[in-house]
Image (cartoon, rainbow, N blue to C red; front, side, top):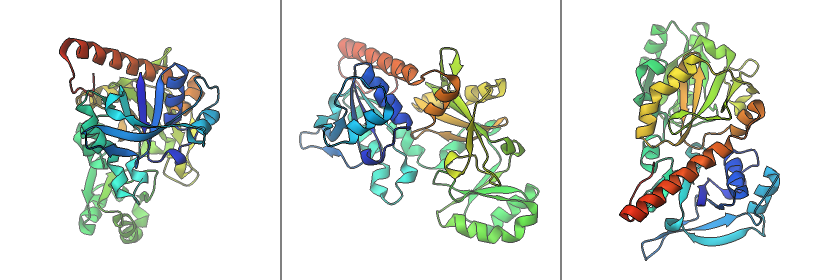
Length: 347
């Protein structure tokens, strides 16, 4: 199988990234693996999609650090590949970290759509990722799984909503990630509400959201693959994130800490409720962030933390994902033999 991982920038990838784990596992299993950055695509005059790509030099690695060093180093395989001829293009960039390069945010989506015409399996589905470019995508899921939410830039509407919720509300930007500009406003802090609204509104629209008391215990990241909880050797791909001291955010980049997760019937029920939409949208690999019996977020762009799940569950979940990709490629090859070239992103 020939597989390319599309990332924000090859030079800024890190050994502990989920993408690195997937790429090294695929390499060790004998697949032809490439990295493509946001500025590496080209649509040539012959109407083919190509890309300047980099790959590791050896066929087997024991260390994530040594694998990525070979990909990023001066002796890495470097080739202008024909993207239309590969089997799988995995879109693993995070648009929220590319705010200074607006053109880069949708590069994978744009070129991925064209590659699909040649029968390349593009995951997650680029058309659906375009819809999910901001947190409004979350509002398309059933109301029963979400906290009560208002999205607006109107200060009066936010104040009225906060009052309706009893004076406690969470404010965060419609676009962005990593816990940046997220505020918990309690009843005795309403005097500071104007300042918080002003800070968040600099990033555009504001999400005002019901605060879930269960958030004091942090949240659980549960991976779904093909719409179902990712399970390998009897273990769920999941971990828990505790809150940082005096900080409502459990995001690891915002001071949270990792813990082992216990997957409950409530977690599995939430996954089942969102499964039909995720499958319909071609969301192959996603991360659910769960607080109590509600979803706080559905991560469809480069969901991370697979290594944290492996740390606690003692199994390499990357193998389950590569198994699934191999099955998709075999299925696609069968249909090509039977029906010729087809556009099919989510077999």
